[in-house]
Length: 224
Image (cartoon, rainbow, N blue to C red):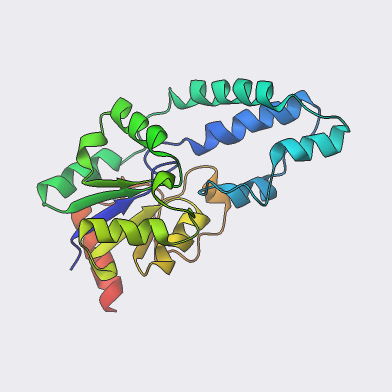
């Protein structure tokens, strides 16, 4: 029996993934080089950039050392400018509201930091929906490591079979599945280009199904 839903944040509640990517594309364009999406995609949904350093890639291609701090500030400003006009993604508020009406527990597990997540949720008027929020501030390793989802289960008092995770990225799906939780992938325009086959279900948006129909579909798949 499903007793709780755990949301990702970036790219699932609001599309922050595109502004981040686009702000980096503009930096690469300024130096006349291309940002390869296949490498960028490896860091979507995680806070770990150990396998891909965009600044280092530019420096290798242009043969010069960059003023990283100055470029970081400009890029971050551009990202925030674009994020500020992004709407709540379709169906999110409906699922949250219905979950509260049905007394389901609501959690959030994000690889971003707490200030980013809580600040944006407050700005969007969604912060009060969530019973618990866990972020990169709470763990040593973020997604695709399952720790964030295991911690969310513990805080909500749920077993893996009593929860559903809503995710948008392969790193997030991997984390949720490795925590043993039924995972619904809801890709945004950027992550729709990635392999989400490990998810138990894929939806075009959260507006496709009511909460009741979603839970019914989840429980039917789990009992099959």
